[in-house]
Length: 305
Image (spheres, rainbow, N blue to C red):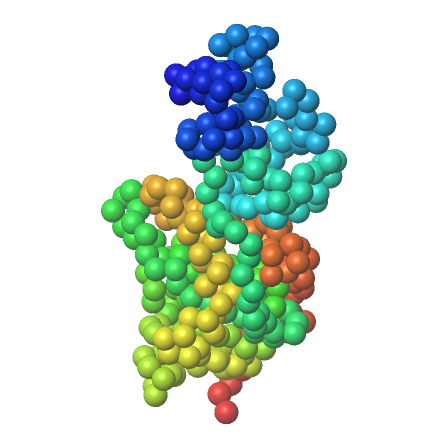
């Protein structure tokens, strides 16, 4: 205010060249003129800063639509604008804001997390049809409140990203994996192939890939294709699924026990398969692209040749 008052006082002196005065004060003439003119009518109060906020915003998002965005984001804090918009449209909401508008709405209501900027271009490697190949891996372990560990095991369809299974295992032994696959294959049928990494319990190393867990699916007619060592991209769909699992479930604090973890996993798997729009699928949900395998799980293992 004192700077402006000094400038305006000098500007009213007819002997002072106005543009030269602006230069001395480090101002552009288009900035100085609005200070000088109102002073003649409103006095010194005219020099105070005033809000540039418009009195009326006809293009502002409707309050009901903004509230729907905020409520859905509260249920899914890791979802961005594109997923929120697609899900609201699927739920039948009218006047859903544009995907680029939603981050602005979220920013007004509080901190906005997630990835900033436009999505990057990827070369997506996927199978041509459901059940052409499945992927599976362990997430690693997380601590439980009872002092034990939970080892999340994910089983995913390569083509549709459909999560066939998400099991809270007490360990990473082959018996736990075979028990989960038996249940999943019984529900969804047999895939043509399964891909996993080269570590235990799938195989010791690339030179010794066969273990009881890799021989068992071979007897079922399921080919086992290990991924390239030190190249997690070969299991990119499962890696991405586990990244989402970590962001939306595992960072929320320790589970009480394995049963509590499994209940939370079951609820999240339903959201992942049936509600969460997947950008790699054109914002469809995985369940829209998946169908069970026509190859049923046999009641008994075929004899070894």
